[in-house]
Image (cartoon, rainbow, N blue to C red; front, side, top):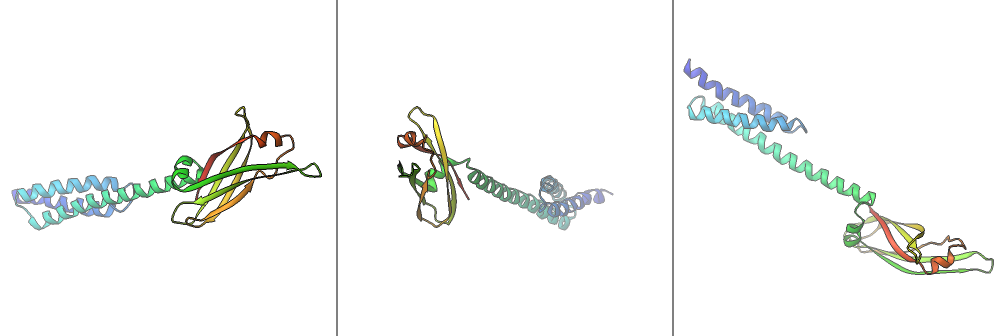
Length: 199
């Protein structure tokens, strides 16, 4: 009777180890496999200490340890993947503008040129050079604002630099459609990068 009781620990350890291994590959459910693996290890150690059903106890111990290790490594891998996806989404949404400007792209703003042509229409442009500083092809969406001398925003314009190769630069002309009422303010305006998205 005593021998049967002691061998029950090994059987329980083996069952918990098998269930733990099966659940360790399934997201969310692998949280349970972590605890089942720990319980399996505990029951296996008790069985080994009491010297009963050594084979089942060792198998339960190995399976319990494996379910804990697999669970921890997969959760770590999934967490890193989710962080990477979250960071990519932040980059695409423009939430990491300062980081992107400091590390991934250089935006060089030229001098605004604008005057009225012979028909009284505004002929204007601001040339901006965008340089991809990464080692991969990237696309950038850049919002640039024109601010007057009092600090008020006059207008904004966008640059879409699509599929810019590694270390490649490209010039873009923006503010090509400026109203005649804004022309004087634009000629003395300050131009700033408001937001940068990278994808």
